[in-house]
Length: 220
Picture (tube, one colour):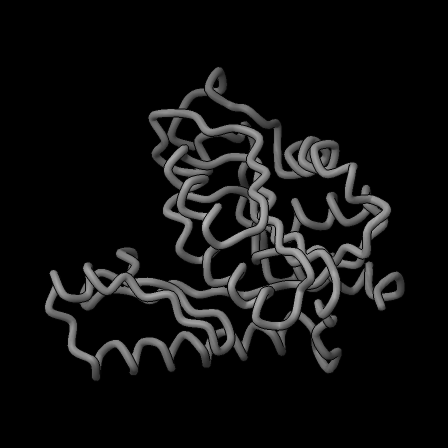
């Protein structure tokens, strides 16, 4: 955690999920599907789904890393959806060959994770539903944008981004992708999502698998 305990807005991801669910309570009677972004977003999303009585599934966007600096995002990919920062690509002189190779590598990783998390279960359909995309926070918003576009492309009636915390500029950017953004806090300065949680451990693949499997019976 970057900040001190006094900076924390949430005790942990479950606390964040409970507060987020309260802010989404008006959707409880809608045909909602919660789409959580692994891994940390699944813990938040599971809490939201339980509170809303909604099914839970994952949506897996992946950052497109820059050459020699994979933490610098050139954009993101989710399924067939690509969100590319064309200006940054041009500034860095990134070749189309590198970009296509990186996108395909991330798509392979998405497929691997989908198989790991769902097993042989097909993804839940978002068609005609209110798709609520949940993460434990956003920083730049690139991966969230890809997740939102994917949900819309798959026929969601309405797409809502629900996150506990993020910088103010992310709300403006992501409002262009979602029908609505519900973000509980937009503090400044903003350095990293984890600084706003008192307890922010890594969520493991095994925990994601367990959280999804525990809610499969209630999904349709």
